[in-house]
Image 1 (cartoon, rainbow, N blue to C red):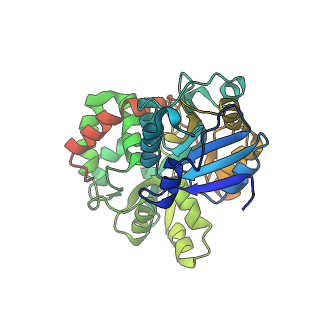
Image 2 (image 1 turned 90 degrees about the vertical axis):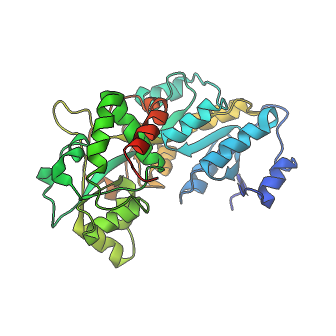
Image 3 (image 1 turned 45 degrees about the vertical axis):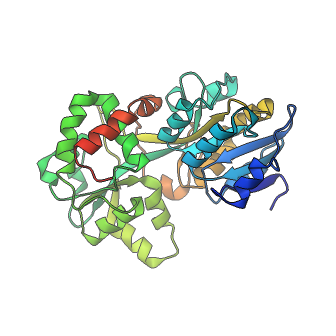
Length: 348
């Protein structure tokens, strides 16, 4: 491993966690060139992303978002953590509500990251985008039949929709975005029609929805675009056969439509960062063309910074207009979304 990255695997009750608690991953006493990064991103370009940071070295702690947030809270003022990176606005919102971020006012971050992809007060910033789209069985659905998320509550889709459980943060953020667009009452009624159209009880992950669509278990599926790209790029012929049977559709396009639901993977400066200057420099580095390429291509996502090239396979699937709403609203609506999903009988 490149010496610029010290990897610490986060295991609850395991030796890595014990090492942190015993101080073997120390809190610096002064501003330095080391960044202690807590991350729930686990992608193939991670090491290149971190070792290319020109401002110093990176100590890496990896784990699930909820576990990392809890660990930072537990460490309190003695936390060695400088930056938290995680996926989905829902997780960024949870971290912010826990009070572990501090605001950053950076000309670079404010210039490079579009306003709707960052916290209004600089608590966190989105560094890559993910689109939650509609997939359809090419033998059963003509794409001309597809239009918007709102249309998925129409009875014409009865028994035809595949989606994962309501406990999934991607689905919760999608519903939160719909609440931002239509209000609580409007989405309460919509959810009743939408859930009545499920082809089966929600189960599995996003890839599982796309596979089930190819198998004809349902006619359309909701999933993030990068799962489809993974199948397209797979060395497994069976995976590529799935993509031959299933097409991808960007909803809510065209005149008068607000655009496809977009979420982010992002991060922010932690409240008790011992290496604040280096940590801000690291966040600014994540907006550079090189870092944006690593960030996005590691998971076949879209760069947050406009104008950066995307994966050619993803590019071949076409362009789309994204919902311009500030993604922070997803977090603000998250608890309401969860409540409405449960009331509609969406299995968790």
